[in-house]
Image 1 (cartoon, rainbow, N blue to C red):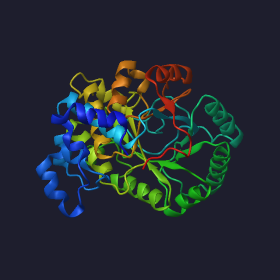
Image 2 (cartoon, helix red, strand yellow):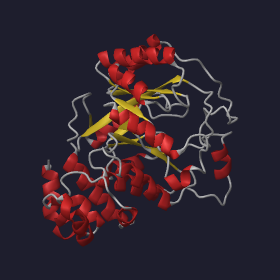
Image 3 (tube, rainbow, N blue to C red):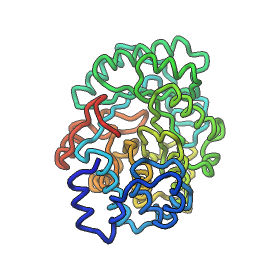
Image 4 (cartoon, rainbow, N blue to C red):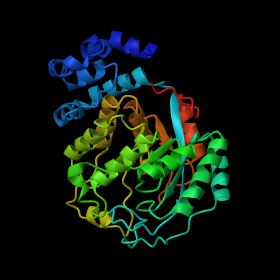
Length: 375
């Protein structure tokens, strides 16, 4: 599909984006076409997403002059999505603290001295109450997060989560859960309950990953995503920017995601909120440490939009640290979803009223649950 505005831009700037309306590139000639066109031109010429991006192609796209990169990402967004729609998601922490993992950034790790106490899982009625409030405020996807390494030996917890998912679905809301690693059988149980999406982030590039987490491998994460997708559940997977990584790591992060088949249904982009008591906060307090720049966030979002055109790209944790103008530019670069409501898992979240006023100013409307056409 191609919007009227997309066609207008194609006419208005032929020197830059004449390639954006090219016919589909057949798989037998994809490599030679990509070489002849250049990575950005090739990406915009495709009529179906590619799952075979090289790091050199992504590096070329990522380092495109920022104004042109953002413009190209907006064109790609309008080609594949309704530019007037935004997905509103609300997140609830259903089991806080006490996680055995050693993620350097996380307030919920039992290894990090953040003062966060481990709590029992909430009751189903509490979830329904929060979901009803989210729906009244316009959210169409309700997400449940539990601080666990995995679901091994949690049969009673699984049954309760299945009940939560089914009852939230019955309210007309899409559901997403993040429970740590799941095997194929556990993923099937969640699918049977009606789960829409499962969140399991890769966090960063494969190369940088071991500097952030040692208790779970990168391949462990990829296996969970595979288990989820093979069960018929949509994969929600993204990462965190600001973990002391380089721009090559941003490229590596997008490389992993863009070579998944299928691509993630949704891709959350988190901006690190450095929490006192976490090793990451201590590392970033060093004046010599690598600090994330806003243009790096923008380049990562735009590159992801260009090479994963069907994905929903979501501004997640840390959005409250962004000015409205920064959020606006992220949407120009291809974002089309936000978390909104009371709180993220352990950090602040922009409120419903604030977000509704902002989105109305921009002319954006909520996506309908279960009805948004991502084809």
